[in-house]
Image (cartoon, rainbow, N blue to C red; front, side):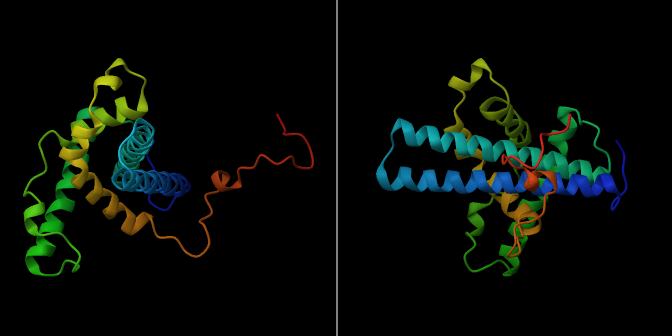
Length: 200
């Protein structure tokens, strides 16, 4: 479906994007907490399971957010073919990486930023495809490959790029005022019994 920036469909997409980023943020915070526990308390199956699930949800929601952002940029919610989605995600990730490197080289990066040696000039050529694949297998679909797919290896290869995307998105979509945002029916959800039965 095509739409114009500022129309009702765009507004609805922005609510969905905000919701998707908040889900991504929740998953990342849960992953960070589980990762900290793993470091401080030692590894065991339960904490590995918790960390895996949180990281898989983080991947899933970040990927879905990126697809929604692409739809907004294109002003079209028609589903993208996998190769086009990969191309958009790779291009945006490369732009974020290049901006990060340039800020370090120009001396405008925050004092806490990592050294330039932490950031390669180019993202791995398979990053976007791997991002999509791990989103599909680790979280999106029940597949036989899940038990043999190493999220540990994926994390080692790609976490710095996912984290850069997350922080880039957070700077725009993660801004929360003192009051939690109104996400329409999402934040109107209730399990309380109201005055009358639900209408059918």
